[in-house]
Each structure stands twice: as structure tokens, then as C-alpha cells.
Image (cartoon, rainbow, N blue to C red; front, side):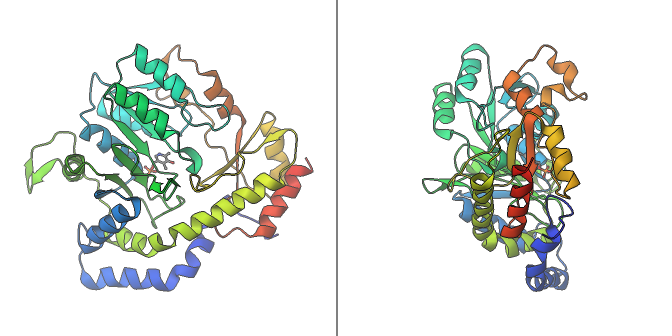
Length: 366
Ligand SMILES: *Cc1c(COP(=O)(O)O)cnc(C)c1O
């Protein structure tokens, strides 16, 4: 087995595309138009068509996408947004940026996604103004129950699709399943730029228009700032051109990620380890995450064999020291236990079967 330097190898990912990427970059340089030009317009159309929505508005990051989706829905000071606390703090950062307050639902102990029953319990006892649902690790959440409970109360739902580009259920793709959806194109995501990027998708044109204004200082037209809360958050032409090269490969890459995840789940047979199981199109295996009560010992064993791993994510949002003063008394035992036990194994489309088998062998010999 080659030695893996980290749980991702973006060099291997980019290498086969070098010719196409060079041509895309040259096209932008030759045109001399670098912000909000034809590449951005084309990418937005192509990505909206891919997701099955009327609109896509590209942005500088996934975190900005979350913040702007909230602002477009009227979220601000005095509002409450329901989310989960095991998804890397991004939704909390966006909620707090608007001046609203997060409230956390528990997660399902097996899938680590939002628990719709706990969500309903909170909606019945609390005033909640919006819900952010994260399709964590590439797995679609139970949108049918979530939307049923949310619509009973007229609460808008935001999908966080930063880990689930291309996941689908009954032919409907992540990004088209709720009111508005947020994507990140950070380089390691299933669809990644060569730098930062993000987008929202929606089939509610008024929300798309609000985000279009927010990404450019809150302008409704040049130098006319009519919408508060805007800042500068645009995907640039180079990144849009690069994403246009990569989008046509996304389904193939996702299929390969699923194959790798399946190989792990079939091969790992260690009673001290729980695998995420085997899934269909609703899973795009952004991260392959196992659980182990003795995580530190397993990590050391794998590190000794030169196998890189990582933890997504080690600290629940409400326990992060930058924010924990807001959440004194919050206790979510399933979330906390998951944060203590999750371990991410290498999973990217260019990983070879032999490399996967090498990781499996070291896990089974522990
Ligand atoms: C990566 C990620 C984000 C944030 O995206 P950035 O582009 O890094 O701001 C948001 N949510 C989830 C679930 C993510 O994985």
C-alpha cells in the first residue's frame, strides 16, 4: 500500500483533470473578467439544473450560504433556529452571526443525523423560527418526517448540503428537498473548488433574490443598499470555471465513494467497532465514519501503521469555549457520546481497493 499522507489526497484528485483545468483557467485569463461574469452565471445555471431547483446563487463559502439563507428567511435578533450540535459548528456560527439563538435537537444514535422525534418535542415546547438540517457525512436526513413536523407549524427548513452534493432519494437531489439549501465548495468536499466557494439553491425566487443582494453589500442595484446584513461574498470567475470542469464528474466520484464505503463496511469485522453500514443513492460517503468507545487506542494503532484518520467532530457546538457561555445547562448525551466515539477513515474517489483493504486489515487485527 502507498503511504497516505492525509485522509484526503487532492493531488491525486486533480491530476487527471489538469488539461481541462488549465484550459478553464486560461479562458478566464484571456477574457479578463474576474467577478460576477459569464462563468459564474453558467455555473449557477448548471448547478441549479443538477440539483433540480429554479435558482442557484454562488457565494464565497458554505458558512456565508448558511448565514444568508437565514437572513433571507428573516432570521435575526430575537429569533430561534433549531439545529444539531455534532456537525462542526458551521450552523451555530451562521445563526449567531445573524443575532439569533441556536437550540439543539438530539441526534439518532445510529445515523448521527437529527432525530425528528426530538425535533418535534422542541417545536411543541419552544418558539422556533427556522430549522437547519445537516445531511451529515453525505447521508440525507429523514426529510419526510422533518418537513411534516415543520410544515405543521409553518417553520421554514434549510438544508445544509456541504457534505452531500449529489445525494438523492426517489430521484430528488439534496438541495431541492426544502425551502433553501446551502453548499460549500471547499476543496475536500464532494464537489470542491481550488479554493473557497459556496452557494445556495432554492426554487423560491424571492429567497434567491434576497441572497443575490446579500452577497453584494445588500445592494438592490449598484450603490443602492436596501437590504441590511449584506457583505462581500462572491464566488469568483476562476473558481466557477473550475467547478464547471468538475461538476460533470460528480456522479462518478460519488459512486466510487459509495463503493469504498461499502468495501469498508463489508470488510470491517471487529466487535469493538461499529460501521455506518451500506447505503444507496441517499448516501454520497463524504466521510467514512466509524464508532469506537476506545477511539484513542485505535487511533494510535492506525497511526503506528501509517494510516491517517481524523475526528469529525470532537466537540459539540454547545461545548465550544467561544460559545459555551450561551449554552450553560445544555445536555445532549447522545450527541456528546457520538463526539467522543467517532473516527473518520480515509475515503476519497482515488483511493485504491488495495489501500482500503490495507486499512481494513489493520482495523481487524486490532
Ligand atoms: C464544510 C461545511 C460547512 C462550511 O463550509 P465552508 O465553505 O468551509 O464555509 C458547513 N456545513 C458543513 C456540514 C460543512 O461540512
